[in-house]
Image (cartoon, rainbow over all chains, first blue to last red; front, side):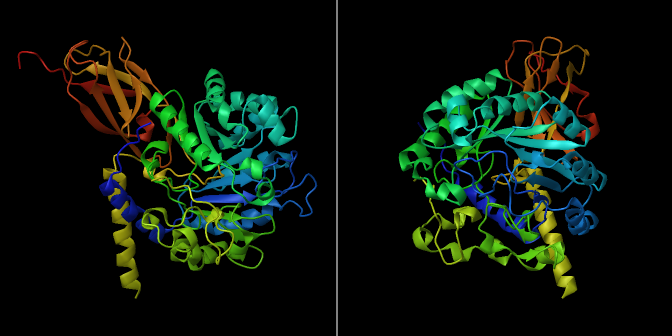
Length: 353
Length: 132
């Protein structure tokens, strides 16, 4: 298929925009890793969470205390808290936490596998001010259940999605981890989503991190990766469902046709996280060696203002395959989670020339 | 030192505002962590497009929000759609005649509306008369 022509002017403008956003560095997307407990044991999990986590859930009061400075600094409703885990629905106090976050002027949402998302829970969460949900759906029924390791997981995720998609004003999307087993069924999955009234769909690949690092069958080959990008571009042209490629990597010639904007890893620029043990980082899937502080010892905003340099100046990523790449200034070394440590090159390059 | 920092901050904010205004899309500011949920609020803009002279509804016009097609007006001039937004302050709306002279020929309307007006827009478009 033909890809749209690269626009050097737009790309140049975008780089100015990115540089400016990096300088402003507003923290307006904060993950809260509220639990490490999970009710599934997915083959591709990037977090290595467990059914009975050895780390206890973080008390909500601790988190609320840590984010108090954000409330003072930023206008109401401009910071969103992304509650993640493990599986956040395992926390019985989730709606109470959300309600308090709204009272303090934060918007909030969850990333869930949908296993515990029934009508009663949906109503409870919406009443507590839930504004955004992401549900994972990794293929048609058989494939999804295989990856998630539970025979009911597809049906329950679909039920959750139907509830969410038909609720007015609730922002949502479906995320699908594309791997070798489900790449052939993306077209059928698309029809399934459309038939169920679902309009927002995001695809990403499985990074070789966490549990997925030891499972070769989950990584797409180079040609499969391109096949997936072409599928996204074609589906966007059809206009029947809003599909995007996750902001996980620079894709070269596909940049203009697979997302609404260019690749921009905002980890440490707009995105921060409070991890289960209080660690302060950016996205939770970033290697824990990049932790910048801890809410039990440090002030979150002080850490945000004075640290995170490793994510705001990414020249150190210019090594390995990136060392002589002419697209580096556009890509800046890909997403942070694709870098295992400071002295190692990117785990995977997604660029197509 | 503090003055220099203030000037720099001001410059960054101005540049950001310029990007917001002229990028023709709010999507540059609509980001999502790769493993997180969408940060936006799902808006449901709706309204009616009327002929500015006669007050009659106009069919066949495309209504865009931040350049993204929302809907095409029906025979009563109504439109309704969805849009994920990150910064709910004001919205750029434009209405484009996409069916040429079928249902009449209309000038492009380009306007800005507030968040409060989003679910009850009344947009008036100017007809282009064939003899003009």
